[in-house]
Image 1 (cartoon, protein in one colour):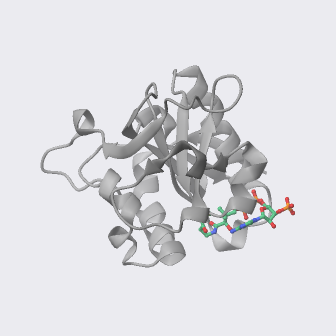
Image 2 (cartoon, rainbow, N blue to C red):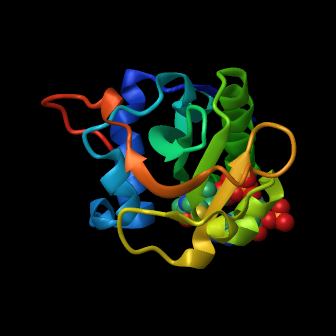
Length: 175
Ligand SMILES: CC(C)(COP(=O)(O)OP(=O)(O)OC[C@H]1O[C@@H](n2cnc3c(N)ncnc32)[C@H](O)[C@@H]1OP(=O)(O)O)[C@@H](O)C(=O)NCCC(=O)NCCS
């Protein structure tokens, strides 16, 4: 059985290896990394899945800026170790992350990911909100989740920007 915990220092190396394997070593070229690089992830939303104390998966969230949103965040990257997939670890990481995010007052969560996977958590296609990312993405994969009641307000719109208030000088972030 797995458990979800806050990320520990010893999880960084296996997390990076897993992300390289899951998304490719060139993952930093993806548009979502324009929003992550040089910005610190949200510490309270940096979780791992552990099996007998061993790293089995990771999910972090990044602060972003979006007009009309309160403390908006970008979900991901999410990955589960290949030998541990299909045990609902990914689902548990996302549900836990959204629950903690709501508790911490984040109201809007964006993700670029597989719609069939994220729809189960209440994500909707972001197209109706006229949101744009700072680079090309497959529009069908761009999704939005409101952590308040009902659909995301229509005021949530425009260019999704880097949260420079969380910039980390001299350290590579966004992995
Ligand atoms: C996607 C990933 C995180 C899922 O983790 P997991 O722990 O194996 O998934 P879970 O066991 O929690 O969920 C399994 C369910 O998700 C579905 N699923 C898994 N990957 C999926 C995908 N890419 N798209 C759609 N559905 C997916 C399974 O079919 C299963 O559905 P069911 O409950 O209806 O049977 C994992 O496969 C992974 O790390 N993939 C590589 C990295 C990646 O693609 N991450 C981002 C996802 S957009």
